[in-house]
Image (cartoon, one colour):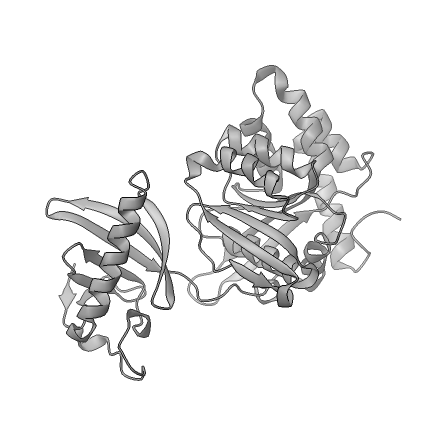
Length: 338
């Protein structure tokens, strides 16, 4: 890997004290002594952090060192510093500890900016209305934008309807924390190690949030607590690694069920599911196109999709998915038969 001089990075244009936030970079590698290297975008080469930013870099290192010392069990975390948010991973090298930072987005995108069909976006937003509860699953493969969609959806619910939201993420990727809807809503963003998702979700329900965002479900405890929250007055949005809607539903059932408890888990998911979307980003580079399939069961327990899930015949969901696709995209309400 080549290391270039600082000439490719110029903080000019910033006012006052130079900051790292003025630089255009994808990744920052910095050690405890304050030596730093930048990687810009898709480039494989590194550039030395400009000397004019040595003071800013040392300030960042102090913050990183304090954060790492406060939670020695965490190998990844997020940190806000000098006007920017970073996702941090610890790297133990033969010359000591290094921090690998990736700068996070400055804002949460609007859900209508993601390339989702307007009628599907409207269906997703509508789920956030008062008295609605349940679980919304955003499924897809790595790099298909699941977290972006989930965070944009939560932001939309808070903007349209207000209320209290709590997120459980490892680590947080978008700046959701704070006041929403001119004081009518508030989001409490939590940085929780993935292995503690189940316990954190159980505690979160005691905070009486209207909305809960849960990072990717990978454990039995997280799956079970998410299902419990979905039938106890909360609207939960979460992500799952899956190649289709059917695979996402099956994966959640497999994670939450333990032997003889499978029928009960199927019944709980059948009662609590509000929606499943599966998305895929097609194409390379900046011109990527979002493809999405979706399933929005109607509230009645007699809904065909709920009956299929309750019976554990997940492979039969395809007919309902195609039916809703045709109905919603053709403007027929929520895709439910009249």
